[in-house]
Amino acid sequence: MDDVATFLRDRIGLAAPVDVAVTRGAVEACDGYDRERIEYPGLEGDPIPAFLFTPHGRAARGGVVVFHQHNGEFHFGKSEVAGLVGDPCQAFGPALARAGLVVLAPDSISFEDRRAGVRGVEPDTHDWLQHYNAMSYRLLQGDLLMRKCLDDAQRALGVLLQLGGVDPRRVGVAGHSYGGTTALYHAALDPRCRFAAISGALCSLATRACTGAWPCARAAAAPRTARAPRAG
Image (cartoon, rainbow, N blue to C red; front, side):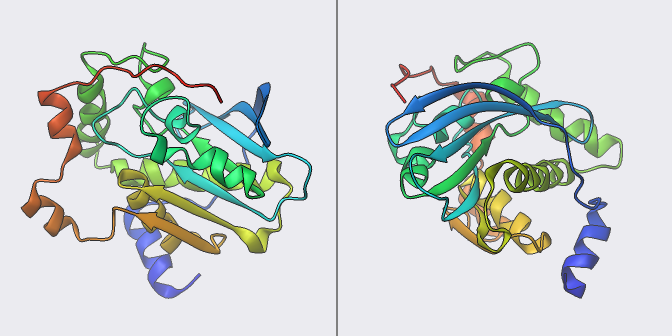
C-alpha cells in the first residue's frame, strides 16, 4: 500500500480488512451459473446480504465484487445486479459469471434487504429518509457514511476471496454510478484490488453538485415503484 492510500485510510478511520463468518443459503441453478444467497456481518454487527454467482462447468478466470447503482431506487440492490429486477443493463452478475468470473453482489446500506424493517424489492415511503439518516447520524457522531461503505466494500472483497476459490492476482471491483464511486475509492485504498471497472462515476464531487446529479433528491421527490421480477 502506498503512502497516499495509507494516509487516506488513516484520515477517514478505515480499519484493516478482517475475516468474517459467512452464512450460506439457498443455491439456484441458472443459465450458465449458480446464484447463492449469502450473508455476513458488517462493521457494526449489521447483516450484509449478498448474491454469489459461480460459473458452471469451468474453472474461474477471476473474481469481481459488483456494487449496485443508486438511481433513487433504494428497493433495488443485489437483485438488480442479478438481473431479477430493474434495468437489464445493470445485470452484471449473470453476464460476468457466464464469462467465467465468480461475482459477489452485496446490498449497500439502506438498499433492498438492508432497509430497517423493510425487505424485498418493493419501495417504501421512507426509503430515502433511511439513506439520509445513515449519513446524518454518522456525521453527528463525527463519523462518515463513506467509512462504513468502504468497510463494507473491503469485507465483500474478503468474502469473495474466501468463498470464490479464485486467484488473488485476478480479483477486483466494478460498479455503475453510486456503485462506481464505491469501486473507485475502494480500489484506491485496498491493495487486494487488482483491477476496477467503473461506469458513470468518473467526475469530481464539485461537478456532480454543479450538475445537480444527486439521486437521493430525485428519490425524495418521486419514489419509484418496483418493476416485475424477471427469471434468473
